[in-house]
Image (tube, rainbow over all chains, first blue to last red; front, side, top):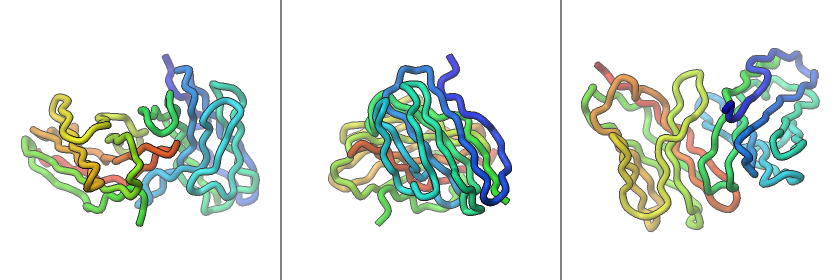
Length: 113
Length: 109
């Protein structure tokens, strides 16, 4: 049972490059989330998906897009990376939206130079 | 006011002592409350959840919730070096899960 799997674990991008962070869960959860974690800022919600086919903006959505490809997969895309997007990104999933335990992936450490 | 606040700085506790962490939240409609532990370089993992006012105990951990005061706390009894980590308070409601900045706990042998 893998839980929540994120790829890649590490990535270095040049300013202006694009990339997609992949996330998949095998727990049959309805809800999935993307957070970023910066020193002193805690976990901030970028986008979330309450169920397959729906996505909504979180606290810090600017510069990002998401796709809920199916119930298992939720991807995060940076169209034109900026140094301010240097962060650790976590994908998470839960059975309910906001009221049940969230399980986290191992994180993606992204550096934009 | 930030949605979930954890204002205390790093907490150093001697091994065997009690560590006490506090968290306040702004949304009175919040329904679910979680404490996550995060080791350096790792992802957060759930250690406690609480939905009703009062205390909930699980091993060496006790979560306390006071909805009237919009306050949730975590006590770690008999602190061990393996408890050294950052503890994140999370509050659920209105279809979202919001996190505080976290409190670092260092247990000194």
